[in-house]
Each structure stands twice: as structure tokens, then as C-alpha cells.
Length: 274
Image (tube, rainbow, N blue to C red; front, side):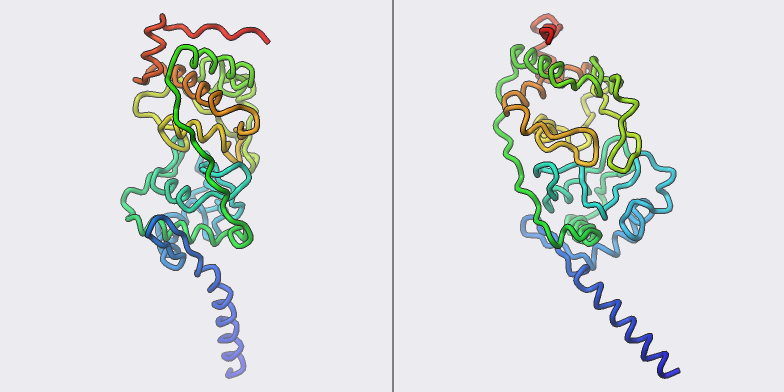
């Protein structure tokens, strides 16, 4: 019995030692430091049901959830301020926990304190070895937004056609383009394009609410989805023109873009044929 007891104790000690580096993971936002050991407690209370004990998105609730919970072991995140293919910043993950995700079962965790959220971020980072070998990418620069004009909106429509955004989002922005039904994410799960047309004044995107957020989506892409980064395809002013046009597809939303469009007669000029 003594031999077994010593072996058991040694095994437990070894397992605990393996856990130490993971639970020593930290996250930093401003003057706050998040600690994985504290985050683990919060995760087990609030997150494990969907994301699973291993962080792989296979929690007990996962079979009934659409879209599926995030697989943290892959360290692939949609909402980032960093270039496509790179890890997000701690601030990015912190924002995601607080904001939640539109059109999903991921709520905004307003009940958590700032420290709670950052502790969760630190723990989430323990699920993938990428956080040990890679650094987050450098956040992309978001230049000042130019004036909203009919010229900008019309050029955005030309880009919408030229870049074939309509193939997924549809000509009216309803998410019903000819490719929409075939789209899948990096886990081979069906995924729906964003429906701009049904948006109201309080609607938001997957990764935010502002024009700056929409610009950032174009330039970073939504990793793990068919939505690519256009950073190497369009110039910053082109991206802003596309932002302005897409806002006019949100016809039920009160916006400067829709005011400009109404003042010009309410119709976006047709894009020239390719």
C-alpha cells in the first residue's frame, strides 16, 4: 500500500507540475493583469457547458448550438485587430468576452467585472500551444474615415460588384447570394453570410457596431470563415467606400449614409459592367 501511495502521490505531483505553466498564463489590458488560475474557476462555472472542459467546443450543450462554440485549441478567432492568420491581442479577446457575438448563443458578459473578463482571457490562452510559440500580430491601422458622399457610396457599389461580394451577401445584402447555401467554416460547419438588409439602428456586426469595426473586418478578415482579408486587394479609401455602400443596404438603419442617399434621390447608380 505504501508503494502504491507513493506512486499515486508522485503521479499527482507530476500532473500538477504539468499544469503550472498553463495556469501561469497571463493576459494584459491597460493596467490590469489577468490570471489563468482565476479564469479557470470562471470558465468552469460559465463557459464549460458550451466550449467543453478541453476548450475544443465540445461541451454538453454544443450539439444543440448553431453556430457551434469556438474551438479554443485551434486559436483561430474571427474578431481581431490583427492581420489574418495571426493571434489576436489580449484586448481583442477581452472585447469579445464583453461584447458577445451577434446571432449566436455567446452572450455579452456584462455581469463579469473587468478583472473577471481578463482572467478568462488568460485561461482561454492555455488551450492552445500557439500562445507559447507565437506573439499576437500588430493591430492594423484604421485611418480617419473620409467624408460620406454619393461618390464614395457609388464607388463602394462598384467594388461590391467587382469583388463579387454579392455572391455571398446577395445583391440586396440579404445574405442570399448564389454561394450562400454552400458556405462552411474551418470546421466544415455551415455558415451564413451577414444579412445587411434586415439590420435596424441597434443592429451590430459579429465584431462590433461602428464603421471603424466594419473597416477592420475588411482588412483583417474573419479567420475560420469564408470571409477573407482584403488588405492586399484594396486601398484604405476603397475600403471606406465599401463601408459607406454597405451601410446603404441597411435601409432600416438611421445613418449618415442613408441620409446622403435620400438627398440624392434614394438610388445608388448602377455599377458599370465588367
